Structures are given as structure tokens and as C-alpha cells.
Amino acid sequence: MSHLLDPAALAALFTEARSHNGWTDEPVSDDLLRQVYELTRMGPTSANCSPGRFVFVRSAEAKRKLAPALSKGNLDKTLAAPVTVIAAWDTQFHDKLPQLFPHVDARGWFTGSPAVAHETAFRNATLQAGYLILAARALGLDAGPLSGFDKALVDEAFFAGTSWTSNFLINLGHGDASKLFGRLPRLSVDEACRFD
Amino acid sequence: MSHLLDPAALAALFTEARSHNGWTDEPVSDDLLRQVYELTRMGPTSANCSPGRFVFVRSAEAKRKLAPALSKGNLDKTLAAPVTVIAAWDTQFHDKLPQLFPHVDARGWFTGSPAVAHETAFRNATLQAGYLILAARALGLDAGPLSGFDKALVDEAFFAGTSWTSNFLINLGHGDASKLFGRLPRLSVDEACRFD
Image 1 (tube, rainbow over the protein chains, first blue to last red):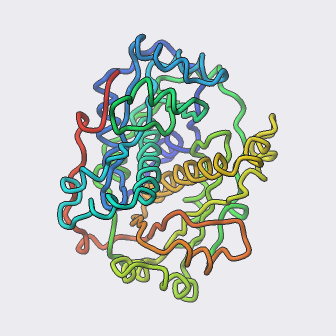
Image 2: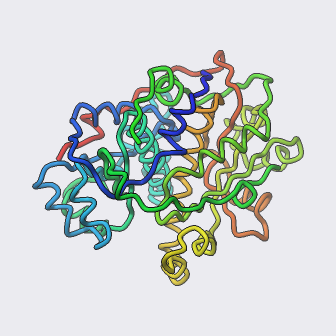
């Protein structure tokens, strides 16, 4: 598979895309959110372990449950977003490995090694959350990811009695460009890369 | 910014893209690798912290340094790939925050909190490595990410005396479709998502 995306697609995904702080009233349908997940799930994870789980918070009641966990600077924009995704992972992700990676006993790599299971879940669920940000952009949505919230409160409010745990949040909707901050600088190739 | 990618672009990034195990002889130029990074760096990180660092391993000498760290199943395909990216992060990433997030003292959030610094670096460097996989695909390359290697050996061989540490590896090149395995299943929306 080899396909060079056109400049408009690269702009939508990377160069012109922005992390949004304000949102228009345009709604986001559950069907579109399903399409976002259908793309997200195709991205690679190690041994296809697919630990990422996603809660699409869009009802007023669910937003009320989320509010106490948000930092002050993230509260208003998150309550205003049509959808807030709780990007999470399943700490028991390895129980799905007989289904996801059926040709070897991959479950056994993790059942006796909580530290390896944690690192694997955190790494791969984060990759999947990154795929979700770009999948949302690819389907015409804007994203506003954020880490400023109380994970323990979110886990208590949304995941009590389950094996899921929160990683970070991603507001989704149609961004209000008038609420954007100025673009921040990035590291140059020379600062962040080596060619060995 | 709102732009719906066409089906060919979605296929190249997500639905038809595969993790490759075999590679054609077609070379990958340093200029193309720079373009991959230029897209990667535009993806969002928390407080623009940008902890991801990338070593493009493509010389015979650098591949020889990498070989002892690879697991048996990942050795041949990694040595055969035109480029292997060591997706890493800078454990002292916060020293760049006065440049990357100049309007507040964000560096101070991390200097006294090694656990917060580690979690932030791991999460955001992993997001950036995920952006790199999709940026490579967007520019016509195939990717083969892998976690089966000895991180301590890679850190010793490539990062001794620096503050960089390895996260995972990503083979890049033009994939040989005849070496692909069958596509593995993914979790359904009902298994991995909730609509609250």
C-alpha cells in the first residue's frame, strides 16, 4: 500500500489542524463517532493487543459526571464540546488476546507480569488514542485533547466495578476558529532527530 | 479546519494499511524522513511538551549496533528494512518548555515530580510516534512498528551519556506485500466503546 496524500489532506490532518478550545453548535452524530472508531481500530498495536477503550461523553448527565474531574482551565471548553472522549484502556486487555492474536498464547505474556501489562496497555492505548485524533480529523471533525483532569475521579465516576481506566480526554466537534490561541513553535529536525 | 479525506486516503492511512514484515529494495531518502518528521511534529501534545525524539537508523554500522537488541522474530525483518526508527523520548523534555510553551513556567510542573514527568513523556512521546506512523503512510511509506526488543541494550548502544530513552521501533520502507500475514480481527464498537 503506497499512496501520497494530497496537500489538502495533509493540511487537515497535520499542518493546518489545531487543538480547539471553542466549538460551534453543529452536532456530532453517534454514527460519525462509530466511523471514527472503525478507522481508529485499524491502526497497529503490538501483538494486535488493542487495549484502547473509548467512552463518548455527550449527554448532559454524563457531562455533569465529568465536570468535577476537570481542571479549571479545561472546564468550560469541555462542557461546551459536543462530545468528550474518555480515552481509556482495559487493564484486563490480555483476556481478549485469544480472540485478537489467536495463533499463540499471548495472554500468558501478561497474566503474571503486571508491570509489563501496564506498560503495554499504556503504550498501545495511547497509540490508539492518537489514531483516534487523526481519524476524527480525517472525517471532518476537530479535536482538542487534554490531560488536565483528575484521573481517579473519572475512574470512580465512569469505571467503578470495571477493569477500564482513563488515560486522557479528547474534545470533539466543529471548532470555533475565533477561539484559537496562536500556534506554538515545534522542535526542528536538528533538535528532535538523529540520522544514524 | 474541516476536510473529509477521500476513500483512497482513508485506505492508505487506516483501512488498507498493514504492518509490514518484508521490504523492497527501494531506498528511503533522508529528505523524505525529514518530511515525515515535519508532519509528525505538528500533532498535538499536552502543553506542547513535544518529548518525542527519533533516531533514523539506516547505515550498516547503526543497524549492526541495533541487532543485538532485537528479539529473534524481529531480527531479519528489521535488518532488511531501509530505515528503522528508534522512537524515543527525552527524559529532560521539560528543559525545552520555556521555548515550546513560553507564556507560563511549565518547566516547574515537572522538575520536582519525576513520576509526573515520566508519565507525561511516555504518553506524549507515544502519541508522537503514532503520528509518525500515520505521517509516514501519508507520504507513501509503509510502517512496521514493533516492541519486541531489549530497551536497555538500545539505550546503552545509542543513548549512553544522553537524556534520551527508547520507547519502541518502527521499520519504514516500501513493503513487500507477499510477506504479509493475514489480517487479524479488531474489537467491535460494542466491545471497545460506550456512548454515555
